[in-house]
Image 1 (cartoon, rainbow, N blue to C red):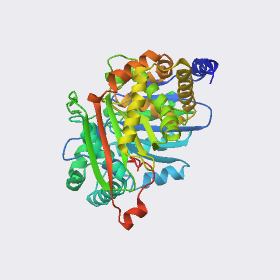
Image 2 (cartoon, rainbow, N blue to C red):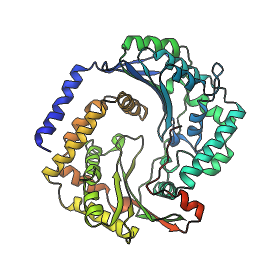
Image 3 (cartoon, rainbow, N blue to C red):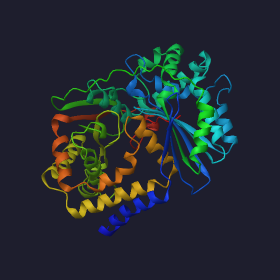
Image 4 (spheres, rainbow, N blue to C red):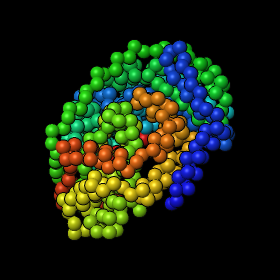
Length: 458
């Protein structure tokens, strides 16, 4: 791709910003934050409510409670029966769902632009008025246990990832799985859930985001009508547990029934919230795309098609998290190769970046692709709202969404080399290898052939 395309992509941003009305914000007296992003391209909207609660807020004995509460949010309030909210949204031509992450739980409705009141009425009601009955709790708890069995316990790659995260972190709550540890799920009670709900599902712990063909003043008026009467809660966020410095490389081997070995590598890296230099997370994002930004990126080109060491190999980094995270690599060795051989090949690709600055031509190609992807994502109302909600919920300013592409465009080859040398080093590394054990007939029939993962959507 040419340098001209980068210029075109960057020039498009101010034009788009000038054409689209800016994000407008307001805060109700009870603490609810409201962000509205008008977009008149189609008569539709997405309404999302983000709570500052997820698995990283949980403590030992109740892990998985945020995800379980997400399930229970669809099981009825004093006004609406179990699953009635989903029925009402569908009757109004919309769709709804929810997802739980490490730093947040979010609920959304996608509707025609004249149906916003439907979403607000339902969400304001279940923000404070869930029934959380014993019968519904017992049913949903079994659903979550079965979800865990299917997506983690019976998936060797997901199981390896879970043990890998627990080994990578010593103190950070990111070591706990979103779906919860089995022993904690066994002892959760409806009373635990009621306490968690009362404390965290409050207007002063939430951000309401609406994007679409809407008038911000009408959105604020509707929000005042439906959410304004709700009382705030006395919040007591848990004290932060800082991850201590890693004192050397960590390694673990997971023995589980599987068809093939699997490799996971993770280097401790900062997020935007805690980087030593503000440019570092953006340089890490560009680095991840240089290594794994599609079929033309280095890992696929060199290890899959070139040396044929890997059947699949991936790299990933997330800049926007509440706490420091990991620069991850995972892969399955090609037939006749080992996880150890694949690990060495990945290490060689890292060493290459550390020793040789990325060429201007390669950086231009990768950065153009990354920036174009970010620009095109703005075509999605859901993505626009999600970006705002996520930033606010992890404690960052939503305005970072407006400067994100500018930061990516400013990354230099020297900065990419600097973060590779600083963060992708053995003393920050944890390595996990899945050691495949024999499968019985039933396990062989349902063994995944691609990387498994834990989904947090209901």
